[in-house]
Image 1 (cartoon, rainbow, N blue to C red):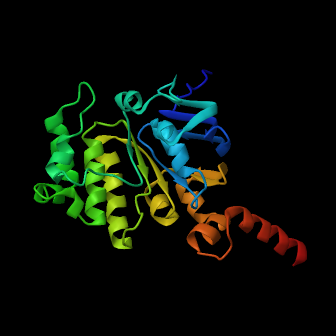
Image 2: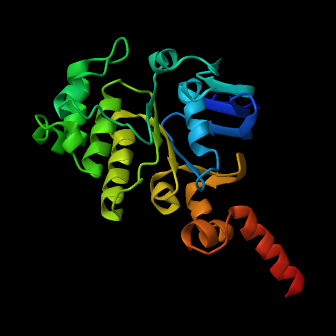
Image 3: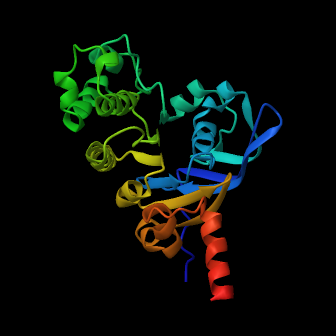
Length: 268
């Protein structure tokens, strides 16, 4: 009986270690996989290492005086760790950062035009796709980006990223500073980007409920390490995830939840 072929994921991170300023280790041994056409969520609280992992994948980590010091980041089977951002973008990986998402002194239309599609991509078709996915951007075209609301800026940041024709879209903190109804709308649009364009998405989020609602798979980071992973639907039903990330308990970390459970079983 023939052995089924093993499909190489689009992105594979193995035992990633990132060190800032040559002394501070921010990520230790993180491993994750992102298959083609998937939406994968990277969850965790502030300081868990989510943004560092995303910036390491995108190449922007060098701007923070940090380097990947161990492990590998493979995209399409090729190692890309510590490559500069322009080289990684040319490969088809585009980052929507947590902050400084748009050029505030340019109009919405100019922000979109400022992005250069990958070689072989059709700018006109990309523009049509962006207008279809974010129809409000056409209406807002003449407005300076600095005068947009938070939700409009996030839409523009996503639209501008799509103008680069990404194969893998990295989204850092979609929900940051936004009202819940706006976040839900943006999450639906992210899923539409995957369905309409076939774009693979890795999203970093503190809002586990929103992220797991659209994701296929999820990873939970705590103190620079993966402490839990699984299918998004099963992860959303996991007792510890529900208690800490979905239930709003007062404990400080996922590890505290685990310690609390062990103590409760021991003394109960």
